Amino acid sequence: MQISSIDLIIVAVYCLIVVSVGLYLSKGKKGETRDANGYFLAGRGLAWWAIGSSIIASNISAEQFVGMSGSGYAIGLGIATYEWIAALGLLIVAKFFIPIFLKRGIFTMPQFLEERYDKRVKTVMAVFWLAVFVFINLTSILYLGALTIHKIMGIPLLAGVLALAFFAGLYSIYGGLKAVAITDVIQVVFLVGGGLITTVLAVSALGDNGGFVQGFQRLMEIAPEKFHLILDKTNPGYNDLPGISVIIGGLWVSNLYYWGCNQYIIQRALAAKSVNEAQKGMAFAAYIKLLVPLLVVVPGIAAFAMYAPISKPDEAYPWLLANILPDGIRGIAFAALIAAIVSSLASMMNSISTIFTMDIYRSYICPKASDRSLVSIGRWASLVSLLIAVVISPMLTGLDQAFQYIQEFTGFVSPGALAIFLAGFFYPKATSRGALAAALCSFVFSTLLKIVCPDLPWMDRMGIVFLLCCLLIVLMGNKQQADKHAYVYDKSLFRTSKFFDVSALIIMAILVFIYTIWW
Image (cartoon, rainbow, N blue to C red; front, side, top):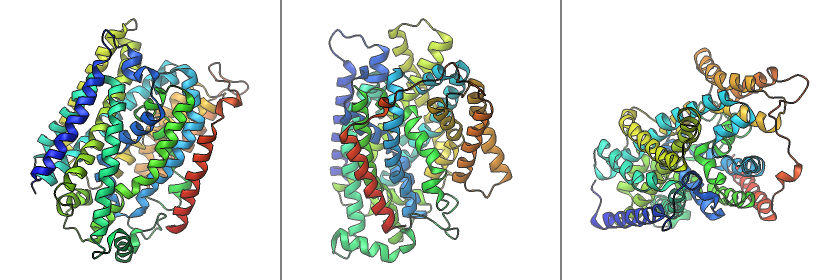
């Protein structure tokens, strides 16, 4: 289906706004020389609203709009647990992780590992993250975005990949984190607004002119099996969402790792003006997280209720955009999708360049590199990672549910990484030997369990591997005294503002209400 002229105009206006703002911010002030702190961490001057918006814009991508809608079509509301539990994860990270990171004044997650353990642990994890970011995350974002453009506009997959890569790289490679974060504020307005419009119209189409409320009631009548947050073993989606494990088991490994140990997300908080500003930003992001399932999961269930003629679940969202939305509105929704894709691409490239430049290039290739040289290398690293993703992304066409693919293979890294960070924070006897063993054995344990117990849900496998890695760290830790690199914290470090405390209570109350209704 071809997009209309009015839709193209809306998308063009959106692109013009984002690129103009991004390029303006990339220029910087007259006579100003961009240093590493300014390029990679926006001069550590981001306000809460920029932090929260950028976290959400970076997180919500094609893997949510397309991949999670596909899982909503195939599995149902259960997939929304990722988003709702994430709201709690953001609060935990804001209270316990962020104060430690900002007190240390670090640039990257590998840098923290080097300070707490040693250079070997830093290097192993830096290589792991670069591989995952480039070959899994960046490529899947490009693929899912290009797939959607192909379904809506008929543009060949490769052409869509090239267009998205060019758009994201146009301002982010030169401008650094500040350009990415501030344009993300614009992006989040488009993606939330456009996503809500798509959901309202898709659900309302089921209501026989009775509006959204009647349409939602009709949706639950047509597909009651799709409205369970905790799946039983008879559910076809149990292997991906194994019952109670999604709220008290392995999902927490993925959750805390993603929000608290992942350079791609945490870099926004590292660039905050203060701890309080970072915590307010993450609380703001948690509020938006409560809304996300309405944007990305409910449309997939609506497509299922409409008996959408699609060949695989990941085509559900593109089908809705092409067949349900009227001209003009389709352009807004399409701009929202592009916003989600481009913001995530830009954020991912910035994180890749930060880790490569600060943890690989500066550590092993040129320790005495100037700030100007570091910024230049960071830009080249962004460009090279994008080119690699452009080459690989068209090879993902055989995927059925891309969101689940990303979660499972990231799960080979996350158990060991989370164990290392938590031990580094709160277990003074943890040593570099134990951390290095956990980093390497996370892959080994995951692979062995996948081979030996192929029917074990990957989320449960992730929880088991996390416990094994924690045990390994304890067994290889010092027996009598704290490690020489262990941190000592005052309890006052973890005090939070009244705004944050009240926000946490409100968010938890909303979650209790949601899970009571759709348990």
